[in-house]
Length: 148
Image (cartoon, rainbow, N blue to C red):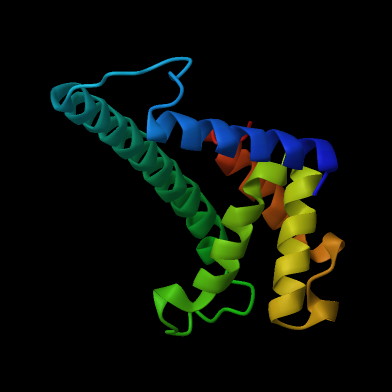
């Protein structure tokens, strides 16, 4: 620890002990009644809930738009062949996590290519083979107002 900071900390502890023993007056005091604390906590809880709900709603919208594009694309025809609807949920979740970095159809194409290449066959998911779905993903996200 920095010697100067340690000296300040030690001085602060000395002052605290003097105040606790009654040998020194505190430089300032704060008086808060229990009702004020309760009101403040209630206000903070509502603020947190609003933020959380807004984040959850936006995530659901991001998920919905992305899932629709990917499930329609169905690169191997798995869904058309009877696979469960959640077949690509891992890849959809990975794409949703990448959306803050997507600012163009090219960015969306790169994300789709990278994610599907790592999950399946790398040679099958080049930027060229993913360009159409990348453009569709970017268009869908833009239409929903989900791209910053």
